Amino acid sequence: MSTSSVSRKSLILEIRGKAKITCDLKRHLSPRTVGTIMRSIPLEGHAHLLGKSIVYFETSVDSGTERARTEFKKGDVAFLPSSGSICFFTNDAVFGKAMTPIGKLGDNVDALNDVKSGDVLYIYEDDN
Image (cartoon, rainbow, N blue to C red):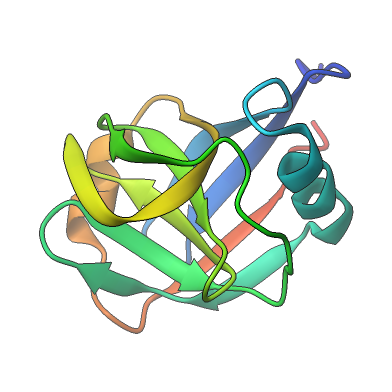
Protein backbone atom coordinates (compact mmCIF):
# COMPACT_ATOMS: atom_id res chain seq x y z
CA MET A 1 0.00 0.00 0.00
CA SER A 2 1.53 3.26 -1.10
CA THR A 3 1.04 6.46 0.87
CA SER A 4 2.17 8.62 -2.01
CA SER A 5 0.02 11.34 -3.49
CA VAL A 6 0.42 14.16 -5.96
CA SER A 7 1.78 16.41 -3.21
CA ARG A 8 3.85 13.84 -1.31
CA LYS A 9 6.08 11.02 -2.51
CA SER A 10 7.02 8.24 -0.09
CA LEU A 11 10.53 6.93 -0.63
CA ILE A 12 13.04 4.73 1.14
CA LEU A 13 16.53 5.97 2.04
CA GLU A 14 18.70 2.89 2.33
CA ILE A 15 22.09 2.94 4.00
CA ARG A 16 23.42 -0.13 2.17
CA GLY A 17 23.94 -3.02 4.56
CA LYS A 18 22.91 -0.97 7.60
CA ALA A 19 19.40 0.49 7.69
CA LYS A 20 16.36 1.78 5.84
CA ILE A 21 14.62 5.04 6.67
CA THR A 22 11.30 6.24 5.29
CA CYS A 23 11.53 9.55 3.49
CA ASP A 24 8.75 11.80 2.19
CA LEU A 25 9.42 14.34 -0.53
CA LYS A 26 6.86 17.13 -0.24
CA ARG A 27 5.99 19.00 -3.40
CA HIS A 28 4.54 22.02 -1.57
CA LEU A 29 7.97 22.81 -0.07
CA SER A 30 9.66 23.30 -3.46
CA PRO A 31 7.51 22.12 -6.40
CA ARG A 32 10.08 22.45 -9.21
CA THR A 33 12.97 20.86 -7.32
CA VAL A 34 10.90 18.01 -5.85
CA GLY A 35 9.47 17.27 -9.32
CA THR A 36 12.96 17.14 -10.83
CA ILE A 37 14.23 14.82 -8.09
CA MET A 38 11.17 12.53 -8.33
CA ARG A 39 11.78 12.11 -12.07
CA SER A 40 15.41 11.15 -11.28
CA ILE A 41 14.63 8.46 -8.67
CA PRO A 42 16.28 6.03 -7.95
CA LEU A 43 19.43 7.89 -6.88
CA GLU A 44 22.57 6.49 -5.33
CA GLY A 45 25.82 7.92 -4.08
CA HIS A 46 28.56 7.76 -1.50
CA ALA A 47 27.84 9.36 1.85
CA HIS A 48 29.68 12.47 2.99
CA LEU A 49 29.49 14.04 6.43
CA LEU A 50 29.30 17.75 7.09
CA GLY A 51 29.99 18.39 10.75
CA LYS A 52 27.78 16.44 13.14
CA SER A 53 24.48 17.55 11.63
CA ILE A 54 24.41 16.71 7.92
CA VAL A 55 24.78 13.49 5.92
CA TYR A 56 24.62 14.01 2.18
CA PHE A 57 25.34 12.46 -1.20
CA GLU A 58 25.94 14.07 -4.55
CA THR A 59 23.59 13.45 -7.48
CA SER A 60 23.38 14.47 -11.11
CA VAL A 61 20.17 16.40 -10.39
CA ASP A 62 20.38 19.96 -11.70
CA SER A 63 17.94 22.40 -10.14
CA GLY A 64 18.40 25.95 -8.92
CA THR A 65 17.63 27.28 -5.47
CA GLU A 66 13.94 27.35 -4.60
CA ARG A 67 12.37 28.72 -1.39
CA ALA A 68 15.84 28.74 0.15
CA ARG A 69 16.44 28.37 3.87
CA THR A 70 19.49 28.12 6.08
CA GLU A 71 17.81 26.70 9.23
CA PHE A 72 16.76 23.07 9.35
CA LYS A 73 15.46 20.65 11.98
CA LYS A 74 16.50 17.08 12.72
CA GLY A 75 14.89 14.84 10.10
CA ASP A 76 14.64 17.52 7.39
CA VAL A 77 15.73 16.72 3.84
CA ALA A 78 17.17 19.48 1.65
CA PHE A 79 18.75 19.93 -1.77
CA LEU A 80 22.04 21.82 -2.15
CA PRO A 81 21.99 23.20 -5.71
CA SER A 82 25.69 24.09 -5.92
CA SER A 83 26.71 20.40 -5.80
CA GLY A 84 23.43 18.68 -6.67
CA SER A 85 23.48 17.06 -3.23
CA ILE A 86 20.62 15.66 -1.23
CA CYS A 87 21.19 16.46 2.44
CA PHE A 88 19.73 14.74 5.51
CA PHE A 89 19.80 16.54 8.85
CA THR A 90 20.71 14.43 11.89
CA ASN A 91 20.40 17.41 14.25
CA ASP A 92 18.93 20.90 14.17
CA ALA A 93 21.34 23.08 12.22
CA VAL A 94 21.96 26.48 10.71
CA PHE A 95 23.94 26.10 7.49
CA GLY A 96 26.05 28.78 5.84
CA LYS A 97 24.69 28.18 2.33
CA ALA A 98 21.01 28.41 1.47
CA MET A 99 19.41 25.07 0.62
CA THR A 100 16.09 24.09 -0.90
CA PRO A 101 13.82 22.23 1.55
CA ILE A 102 12.40 19.11 -0.11
CA GLY A 103 11.06 16.76 2.55
CA LYS A 104 11.20 14.95 5.85
CA LEU A 105 12.63 11.69 7.09
CA GLY A 106 10.22 9.38 8.89
CA ASP A 107 11.13 6.96 11.62
CA ASN A 108 14.63 5.78 12.47
CA VAL A 109 16.39 9.11 11.73
CA ASP A 110 19.04 8.19 14.29
CA ALA A 111 20.30 5.43 11.95
CA LEU A 112 22.05 8.25 10.07
CA ASN A 113 24.33 8.74 13.09
CA ASP A 114 26.01 5.44 12.16
CA VAL A 115 26.79 6.49 8.58
CA LYS A 116 30.48 6.57 7.75
CA SER A 117 32.01 8.57 4.92
CA GLY A 118 31.90 6.38 1.82
CA ASP A 119 28.83 4.33 2.80
CA VAL A 120 26.41 3.92 -0.10
CA LEU A 121 23.14 5.83 0.20
CA TYR A 122 20.33 4.73 -2.09
CA ILE A 123 16.99 6.50 -2.37
CA TYR A 124 14.14 4.79 -4.20
CA GLU A 125 10.37 4.36 -4.38
CA ASP A 126 8.76 1.92 -1.97
CA ASP A 127 6.81 -0.35 -4.32
CA ASN A 128 5.16 -2.35 -1.54
